[in-house]
Length: 390
Ligand SMILES: *Cc1c(COP(=O)(O)O)cnc(C)c1O
View (spheres, rainbow, N blue to C red):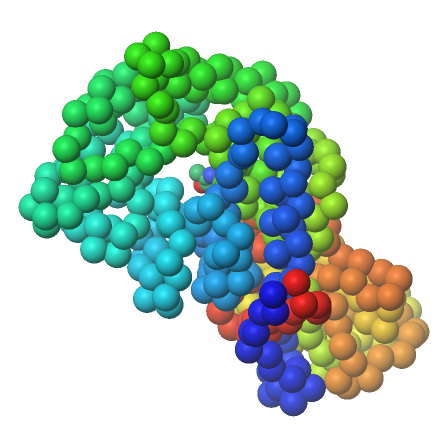
């Protein structure tokens, strides 16, 4: 199929900083992910829930979900508002809200046909009661805490929630899930313990000869490292966007990054020796250098803590960012090379021979790739491309 997405001709754009999202790359990543978890012929198919919380990890909640809705079994968002926005935009796919819920929100879930996370016996009975009062049926997945200590009933109390779920008259229990705290850490001992606890919780159904609801626990890292954790469905987030969670996760699927972040040179000057650059004078040169200014800064989500450690690509060469990154601008040392006003600058993405990845930026900022992507904020216009018909 062909996806028609709005495109802006960036040459005509008045904004010199933008992010390009390749929807075809995202669709290809989904196919690769689905193929990789369904490698065993004759085995029960493993479903794929696409996690699009936090503005689809910065890629654009509505555009990404719309482009992928027909190849996903379920869409995962973090908060109610994200789910409502998708419904208002006409997206009909099943949507699970992964985060916690408070009482007053429950009728809105039911009204918009969003799947609730039922994380305690009390919450489940509130959901049942709200559905009864509205004369509707609610949909829920049970949430079991196997070692994250976030939302969910503890694994050792899970049977109470499971028993209560069997008695709910107005709620369809469509799934049961848990979440790993350490699937991307070097040591998988804790992840394996969590999986073991979850398997014991699932034995509840087998012991009673009841068909279990769709069971899921694997995030991106677990998908690639713990094949026994695939169960009935996987929940990839970061991997969908072509990025790997940590260096401990094998890059065993050929997913490709879907986002490039670009800007343009807007100023050029020669900085003399001993003339420090930017706030706090954290950098200076002992020889004259050519310096260009780029209209992007931490006010766009280019993290300030990358100051003096990040690089950008100009004219197919990598250069060092120098001085403190400002809110709206930053300076690049091009030594004695040439660059002109309007030249394209790649903050994230590839030129003919050079490449800057989300993983590189995470190292420069001393953070996780997740924070790099979700930091790119609303001041950076997203431009949607679809390089090929798929
Ligand atoms: C964010 C999230 C995911 C996706 O995690 P990735 O590491 O990005 O794959 C899966 N499940 C839950 C409950 C989440 O909150």
